[in-house]
Image (spheres, rainbow over the protein chains, first blue to last red):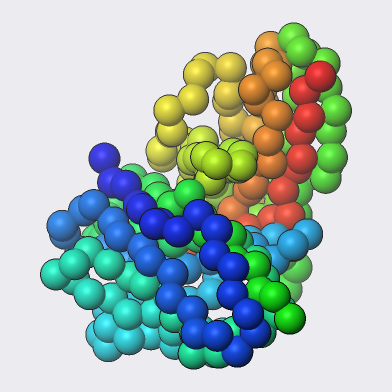
Length: 116
Length: 113
C-alpha cells in the first residue's frame, strides 16, 4: 500500500527564516503529488500540486515544491516565512493513471509555528 | 461558487449512540471522500463515493458507513459510537476523481463521551 512520510512533526522558525518540509512516498510508479495546508480554525486547502512537467512547482503565498523522482520526494520550500504561515502542512499522493479506484494518501502532517 | 459544506459543525454524543454527518459537495463535483483526522494519526481515509457508488474504502470497522445521493450529497454514519471515534471528520469533493485534487469542507468535530 502507498505510504507518505513527513519527517518533521513540529517545526519552529523565526520570521524571515527559510523553510523546507520533507515528504517522501513509497510508490515507484507515476504519481500526482500535493501539499495541503490547514490554517488554525480553517479548512484544509490546496497549497500546490504536481501532475507532470517541470518538477519545480509554484503554489500560493510564495511556496514551491520540488519533485525528485529518484528520491521519491516532494519537499516543500519557502525562502522567507511569515507569522501567517503558522499552520499544519500535509503532503499527499495518488497513483496515476488510475481508473478512479485509487485513494489520495496523506502524510501525518507537519505543524509549523512561526515566531514573530 | 459555494465550497464544500458539512453539517453539523460540532456534535457531542454518548458512547453507544449513532451519528449521521452530512456533506454537500461543490456544485458539479460527483466524487465525495470522507476522512477521519486525529492528532498524531493525520488524515485517515474512510471511503469515497462517485455517482452514488462506493469506489474505495479504508480500513475502518463496519460501524462506519456512508452513502451518496443522486444530487452528489453524501452522508456518513457511525453506529455504536466508541470513545476513540472522537475526531474531526472531513469531507472532500473532486471534479475529476482520478487526479486526486480535492476540496475540503470545514469538518464536523465529533466528541464521544
